[in-house]
Image 1: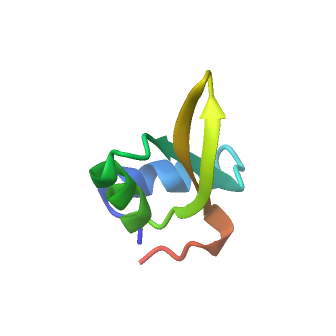
Image 2: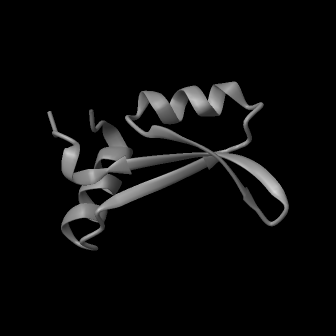
Image 3: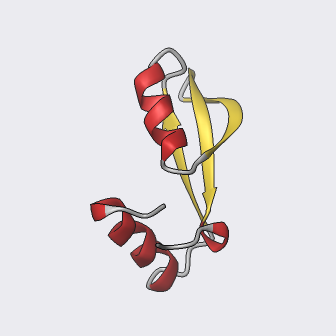
Length: 68
């Protein structure tokens, strides 16, 4: 579900930038951030290391999202 500013960002990413997906990362122990990311429709893909730090990695396929 697209709401508020995030909806605008998702529409812009898809329609103007022609992006196919968005990604999000969060510290694995930051459960509140992980919950928000999942509530926004991102799918957890596992943990990845970036710059020697582990992150929870999420993807959102824009083509699979339906706007209300």
